[in-house]
Length: 592
Ligand code: ASP
Image 1 (tube, rainbow, N blue to C red):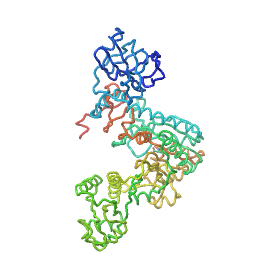
Image 2: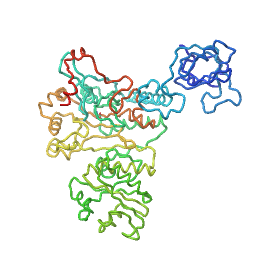
Image 3: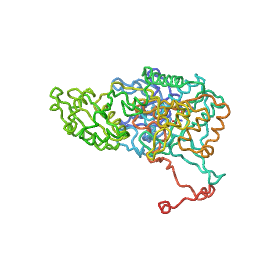
C-alpha cells in the first residue's frame, strides 16, 4: 500500500506521527518561500506545508499543479495559533511534507475542481465524468448509494431472500416500453431483447421453488427520456411465494423504513394505503404528493345546466371531468402568476384555467372576482360552499376530458402547493392500491396498467365480460409524488393468464410464440406468488435531494440516450455488420 492514511481521516490524534498520503493536488498556494498543497482523496482534504529546508520536496511541490497525483510523506503537526480552519474537518492540523513523489502529472482540467463550480454545464461534466466525480458532492452521492445497496442486501439476506442473476440477453419482457435489441450472429436476422425488467425470470424462479428472490438488476427501456428516466436503470427486484399482498407490502415497507431511519434519521409512520380511485378523485394522480394537503373537488354535477360551454360540455360528457382546486390564501396571487399557471396547465393540454378570487363571501356574488362568475351565477355560491372557500382564497377550475383534467390539475395542485409553501411535511410516503387491470388506448384497445402477469381481483368471467372494470392486486410505493416502487400478486393459473392475454388482444398463437415458457411453467405446479421492484436510482435521488437522476448514476446517459464520454451509441465497422447479417439503410432511403 502506498499510503498510511487517507487525507480526510487525519486529526489531532495523529500529531507527531509520520504518515504517507496519496492523492490529488486540490489547490497549490505559494506563500513566498513556503508552499501549501491542499491534498485531496476520497475521504477529504488536508493541508500540506513544504518549506525550503527540504529542497528536494520543495522542488517537487514547486513543480506540482492542480490535479497532479502525489505521494507525500510527512509529519502531522498542529497548525499555528490563528491559522486553524474550523470549516475543514482536518482544519486543526497540517502535514509538514518531507518527501514528495509525483506519481502523475495533470493538464489543466476543463473545469476547476477547487473553485466555484456552479457555472459548469452538464455536457462538459458528462464528457469528463471521471473528473466530475472527483468532486466531493458526487463522491458523497455514490458513497450513499453504495450504503443503500449494502443495507438492502443485508436486510433481504436476513429475511431469507436469495440473490439470483437473470439474463441480460433474453426475449422481450413487456413493461410497456420499447425494447433494446441485440442482433444475433449465430442466427442472423434474430435478435435478443435486453430485459425491461427481470419479471418473467423471477416468476419462473418461484415456479422453481426459490421462495424468496432478489436482485439488484439493470433494466433497459427505450423510451422518450424525461428528467427522471434513463435508458438503463437499476431496480431492487423482489419476488416471493406463498405471501399475501399485505405480507409483501409489509416486508418491503419495513425495508424502506429502516433505510430512511438508519441513513437519514427519518422515521416514517406506518404507511397509509390509498386506493387508486381515491387518489384519482382527490389528487388526480396515481402518485399523489401528499406533502401538499390540498384536494381537488368534483363539481361536474353542478355544471350540467350552466350557460358556460367550457363547463357545460365536459359536465355532460361521460369522459369529461370538472374539478375545483381551492388554494387557501391564494386570493393575493397576482394576475401574472395566474397567467403563468395557465401556461403551465397548457403543457398538459388544458385550453385555459378558470378561477374565482373570493374577496368577501358575505357580499355574495359582489364579493367574487372572476371572469367566469357571470356565466355560472345560479350555482356559484353552492359551488364555493362545496369546496369550502373562505375569504382570501382562490379557486381554480379544470374542465375537459378527464385525462387532460387529471394531468393538468394534478400537476397544478402540486406546483401551486410548492410555490405557496403549503407543504405540511418533508416526507410523504404511501401505498396506492387497487389499480385497474387495464386502461384504454387512444385507438380503443386495452393495455395493462402494470404488466400482463398481474393478478386481477375478479374471476375469469367477470374479467372477460368487463375488462375496463377489473381491478388488480397491484400496489405502488409512492414518495413525495414519485413512484419509487411497484408490484403485484401474479397470475399463477393458466386460464386466467390466457384470459388476460385475450383481453389485451394477444392471440393464442402470439401468446404461445412469445410466452410459451411461461405458459408451460404454469402447467407444472406454479405457487401463488408476487413481488415488487423499487427503482434504485429514483430512491437515491430522493434520499440525497439530487435534482436529476443523472446525478446519482456514475455514468449516465443524456436525454437523447447518449453517453457523452464514450460516445455510445456509435457506428460499427462493415465487417461486424456483415457478420451479423445486417445492412444499414442509408439515411435518404430510411427517410423515404
Ligand atoms: N416488473 C415490475 C416493474 O418493472 C415490477 C414488479 O411487478 O415486480 O415495474
